[in-house]
Every structure is written in structure tokens, then in C-alpha cells.
Amino acid sequence: MEFPKRVKEVPPYLYAEMDNVIAEIKRQGKEIINIAHGDPDLTPPVEVIEELKRSAGMKDAHLYPTYWGMIELRERIAHWMEGRFGVKLDPEKEIIILIGAKEGITHLFLALAESGDYGLIPDPAYPTYKASAIFADAVPIELPLLPENDFLPDLGSIDSGVLKRTKVLIINYPNNPTTKVADRRFFQELVEFCRQHRIYIIHDHAYSEIYGGDPPPSILEIEGAREIAVELHTFSKTFNMQGYRIGWACGGKDLIRALAIIKTNTDSGVFVPIQRAALKAFEVYEGFIPSLRERYQKRREIIQGYLRDLGWNYYPSDATIYVWTRMGVGNDSMRFVTELIRKYGVMIGPGAGYGKYGEGFLRFSLTQPEAKIREGMEKFIAFTREWM
Ligand SMILES: Cc1ncc(COP(=O)(O)O)c(C=O)c1O
View: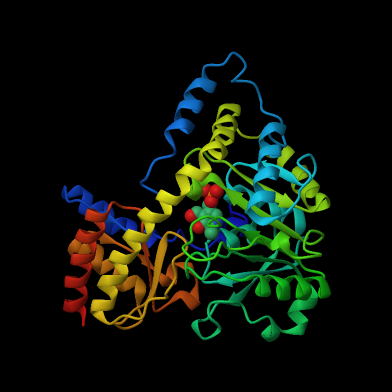
């Protein structure tokens, strides 16, 4: 018996090739230093943890949540979106709670694309985008993010035949893995372009709060965006609540309603105590986020310092929880990283794991304490010198 195309065609899990090597190293009792994954080591605010505990003990905590999410939480999100981006949203119709941004990505493709429609997927990118297009029986078409275009898509280069068949385009700025931040002008051009070609936009804003310079904008700030764009937000990186599984989608009411139709028939919302914990997170946002940014900035500078010593050309950004660099030694990122794990037990992200245009690059993650990062980087440097 054959499994369906949607199972067979999904690209292999990013670290699948390395998993055997990692398992072998662990069997030998050796430690792995993981500066590859975007899984924050820092904890959520204590108030959030306390709220989760308290709410879990409430009499009705176990009941099914409402499909769209608690209205108090959606109202709080509307208030935050207005303060942070100047975007006014109707909490009843233009915001829906998600089980993390990842869930939103998958369900939005189902909500917006017809079987056989084209979906424009950045390359390199978070691997879920392509898989989600495949699950919806859409055709993933790569949208290269190249260093010569400063990791923005070149909209003018998209074939007109492709555009005619394209229904959905997904983007993500601040970007994983390239760390590029897009400005309002880019979003303006993108919205105009997609309105002209009748293409829905999904903007994955997972790293909206992890930046050093000017605050990254929301696509919903752009006039006319709401009719065609949905923006995804998450508590995962802003509050280190990645295991809680909670985020939200916001945008025009018709798009959010389409997403709600898929969601109400596939999931049953987010556990209420987690929604209450998320509500609490907004209360402590102002006090929590500056120190989080500072911690990441210190870690970023450590990694960048080592790369500078090597003379490597990393992308100068102070956003996201990654450092993206061109390899200064050959182009085979998968082989380089696999050997680095085998010899030194240090794990970093191979650019090729994010798409073919990621080849020749590496992604370092800032999700380990400074001392661990230093230890990992020392080993990485020793290995690189051997590799040269
Ligand atoms: C670009 C991007 N989008 C979404 C996610 C997942 O977010 P969530 O934990 O809210 O599902 C990640 C996680 O690393 C990511 O890098």
C-alpha cells in the first residue's frame, strides 16, 4: 500500500541526517552542545508560570476552550497590537487564538489555497511553509532570498505564468534563518504587488519582538493589507513560552473566518489555563522584554566575535535569535555540520536544511547560556581550522 503524496513529498526533517550521529555520540556518554535549534533556554516570566499553576487548579479548567479563544485574551491582543503597531483590530472577528504560529501556517494554507494553486515559499525558510503547501495540495514555488537582494524576495523576477496560478505567498520578517528585518517600504510594495495579482499574504511575525534597532513593522500597518493579509504572532519567542503552544492570527475578518472554519473542525483551541498565562504575559511585557533582548544581544556578540576572528562574512543583524553566516570553508553545510557533531559534539544549523538557497550558509542559535556558547564556538573554531 502506498502512502499519499502529502506524506511522501514532504522534505525530510531538517536534522534527520544528523540524528544518527547525535544518537551515537549520546550512546558514548558524550555531551552535545546545541547551538542549532531555536528552542529558547531562558524561562517564561515567573508571573506567567504562577498564573498557569493557579489557573490549572480552577474548577472549570478542564472544559473544552472556545474555538476562537478567550475574548479577554483577544481584547488584550487587540490593545497590544494598537500600542505596538498602531493597528486597530476587532477582537471578535479579526483575531483568533492559535496553538502556536506553526498550527496557523498549516491551517492557513488549507483555508486559502485550492488544490493545484501555487504557493510562493521563501528559500531559505522555516521548513513548515513548504510542508504546509504540500498538505493543502498546493504547489510550492520557491521564492529565493539571496544575499545580493539583501534577503528580500525579488518580486519583479517572478514569472507571469506563475503569478497567474499563485494564490498564497508567505513571508517572515524578522526572518528565520537569514535574520533580515524588512522595513515598511518593502511591506508596502508587497501589499501593492499582491493586491494587483490577487494573492493572499501570510506574514509570519514570530520574531517581531526580538530586535535591536527600530521595531519591525506589522504588515497590517499598510493600507489595504487587511483584505489580503493575515499576520501570525506567537508567545514562543517573545516570552519563551514555546512549549505552551499559543499564538494568534490576525487580519481581515474574511480570512480569519476561513481559518476558523478549518480550525473548528480540526482542533479544539488552547487549554484555558495557558490562555490565562498568555493574558498575564502581556501584563509583564514591558518589564520582561528589554532584559531578554539584552541577553540575546550579548550572546549574539559572542558568536559574531568568533566569526569575525575567522574572517567570516556573517549577516549584520540584531534581530531574531540566530546568527546567519556564509561559510568561509567550502559550500557543503550538511557535511560540515555532521562532521562537527561527530568530532566535537557541537550542533549548528546547516543552511541547506532551510532550502537550496541556504546552501553555503550556517545558522547559529542564541538559545544557550553564554558559557555554553563560548565552549561551542571554541570547538567550532578548532574544527574549522582543521577543515580549512
Ligand atoms: C519563522 C518561524 N515561524 C514559526 C515558528 C514556530 O512558532 P510556534 O512555536 O508559535 O509554533 C518558528 C519556530 O522556530 C519559526 O522560526
